[in-house]
Image 1: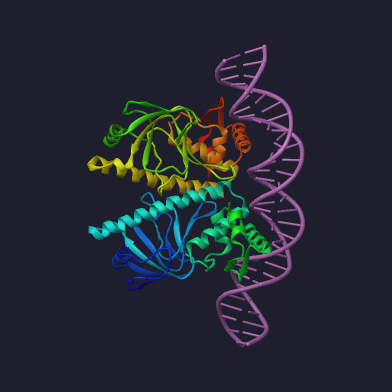
Image 2: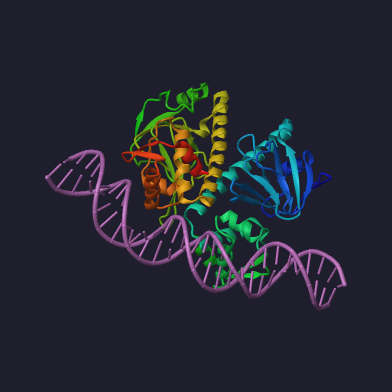
Amino acid sequence: MYLAHAQTFSGASRLAPLTAADDLMSQMGVSLQFERDEEIYGQEEQADMIYRVVKGAVRTIRVTADGRRQIGDFYYPGDLFGVEPGEQHVFSAEALCQATILVLKRSALNGAAGAEVERMIWTAASRELGRAHQHVLLLGRKSACEKVATFLLSLIARTTCDGAHLSMGRQDMADYLGLTIETVSRMMSQLQASAIIELVGLRDFRVRNPRALAKLAG
Amino acid sequence: MYLAHAQTFSGASRLAPLTAADDLMSQMGVSLQFERDEEIYGQEEQADMIYRVVKGAVRTIRVTADGRRQIGDFYYPGDLFGVEPGEQHVFSAEALCQATILVLKRSALNGAAGAEVERMIWTAASRELGRAHQHVLLLGRKSACEKVATFLLSLIARTTCDGAHLSMGRQDMADYLGLTIETVSRMMSQLQASAIIELVGLRDFRVRNPRALAKLAG
DNA sequence: CGGGGCCTTGATGCTGTTCAAATAGAGTGG
DNA sequence: CCACTCTATTTGAACAGCATCAAGGCCCCG
């Protein structure tokens, strides 16, 4: 990674409009550039930084001793990540593609501005908990087909309206959904065969039948 | 349920010692009694209460439109629950057995005491997030056997040292682990056949080989 | 002693995994 | 711009783990 000058970022996402607090964060933090698959922070590192995606996308990931991977979540422009309970990170974070990340030291926060940022962090943590609960339901009680359908829908909801772009490869989808790469691939093919989605290359898709997709997602 | 006079509770759990703040909570809240399987709060109810288990045990549960159940977590004496992101509950909470629950209205909190309780709530939310992450890993990447082993271990860690008591039935275990009741039962039998645990009646067990159990849990 | 709920056990089938091979894309150098 | 190579993805076939269906047993409690 390499340093860039601290900058504000606007228009990255319709879901995270630029606010005074965002602007504040930009001024207080440092903007870093990461390459594809580069680690942003590691499992068991100290967790006193807070991160925001400015450009690109990020995954948080946990690897067990015997090599099984589980992806915690994906993050897009405007999203805060790196908020974890406990002193140390349980997940590591990696860039899905070339990404610009704003980094802030939590312990350095002070004053009214710091309090404002702390509020943002708590909001992010709260959203995180909600998403984790969704994730639990998905992993515990959904079929492979439902998992993939749910994933595609939430992807659309979080990124742009029509922009149906998969920032991640099939392996990352599989490790998020608790499936294998083959099963994910099969479900995608099946959705396409049912004319519910249309794959455009490997990394893009269009939803042709949103109703059917929503129904499959449950 | 029926009202009892507000009371402090001590010695319930070695993990949650009575502190000044606990005492505070007791004074500010109301203690209620619930019967087995009685609902404490419902899915989609307003979420401005905070709850603490005084005696007994609690499950949070989510039911989908087509009747699939997913248990979010179990709570034991000393634990706070009911902290959820968003205005409305996504989970409902039910008593596993006859239980005494301390209830507090969040919006009524004020002053130094209120701030102290708010801190406790945030701590609980943070712990909640950590546990949700553990749950995701368990559901996404563990086999039935590993799931059950992990569950038994975490149960022992959360309740008393030797007290290996299952507050919940097999169905609740299954709905927590993303399995069926039959599979849970088979795994328990298998653990017993391997002399790793010993079942004492239906609701109690002893760990005969903690090392082996930990190994199975991964 | 009898009834009902919960748990266990057995037999069978389906869903998703595993292993293996073919194909398609993306990047590179000619 | 095309051929080549490397990696990611798709597809197929066999298998395994867990679910489902169906009895049977245990325990609690009247």
